[in-house]
Length: 418
Image (cartoon, rainbow, N blue to C red):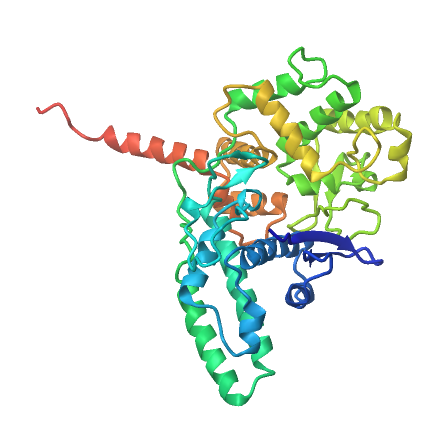
C-alpha cells in the first residue's frame, strides 16, 4: 500500500513544523495548505504533528483498495458518499502501525469491514486494539475539518451551480460524519489515572536511589540522573516537557529556586521533537537537600560528559545530547519492570498526579481553605488563577474526603432497632 508519512522539520529560525510526504517522496500539497492554518494560529508544534499524523492515516486509507479519489471527485463537484465516510470513521479508531491492508483486497468492495481485514505487524497476524475514545474523537474531528477544507478549496474553482451543489453535499455529509464522533465523558471514571499512595511513593524513591541494589540501571551517571529526575517530578509536579526544557541558567542556587519558562522553538534546543511548557512561566522553590542533589548531578555527573557542555539543558543522554521525551518514557517503562506490584501504570504524568494529591493532603493538615488552596496550587502549577485543572489530578484525595464525610453521616443513623 502506498505510504504517507508525517515528517517533522525545522525552519532556520528554529520553528518546528510538520509535512506529510506522499508515496513519491514529495509533500502532499493539500495537507501543506491545511496545516498552514494551524501554524498561523500559533498552535504548538506537537499539536500540528498530531494533525499531520492523522492525515497520514486518512490518506493511507484513501489510497487503499478500493481507492477513493477524493481530489478527482471534488474537481468534478462530487463529495464522498456516506458509506465511504463510514469507512474512514472506522479506520480512525485503529493504531496506524496496525493498518496494513492485504494487497489482494477486492477492488470491487465498496465498504470495508475492518473486522474482516487481516491486520498485521511484520508477517504475523495479530489482534488489533482500538485507540482510546478521546484519540478516536480527535482524529475524526481533524478528518472532518480537512475534508471540509478540501471541499471549500476546490468548490471555489467550479461553476456556480456545481459549487453550490458541492457545498450542500459536503455540509450534509460531514454533519452526518461528525455525528459518529464518539462521546468522551468528562466525568471521572473509577479507573481514571491517580497518583501513587504514600507507601508506593516511598518505595519508588528507595528503588531509584543511586545506591539501591534494586536500581534497574547499571551506569552511575544514568543512576544519578534518573534519581534526580524522579525526585524533581515528585517534588514539583512539573510536566516531563517542562523538566526536559530546564536549562542550567534557570537554576538560582543562592535562592534554592528554579525557573520553569516557556521557550517555544528555542534555537538552542537541537531535539527533533520539541519539548516545552504548556503552562505559565513560574519559579519553584526547592528544599536545600533536593537543590544539592540537582547541583551535584550538574557539576559532577553531567560535567564529566564533555559533549554535554555544548548544550544548556540540564538533563542529557550519555552522548551529551539533550534528553528526549522518548527517553523519559523508556525510563518509566524500566521502572515499571523494576517495581512490580505498583497499583498504577507508572508514567511521568503519574508523578504529577502524585504531587497534586500530596499538595491537597498537606493543605488539609495546615488548615488552608479550599479557595486559598486552589490559588496556591494554580500558582505552583502555572495554571491561570481561575483554572479548574486540579479536578483532573486530585481524584484519590477527593474520594477519600468524600468517604470520610459519608461514614461520618452514617454514624448518626440508629440501626440498632431500639
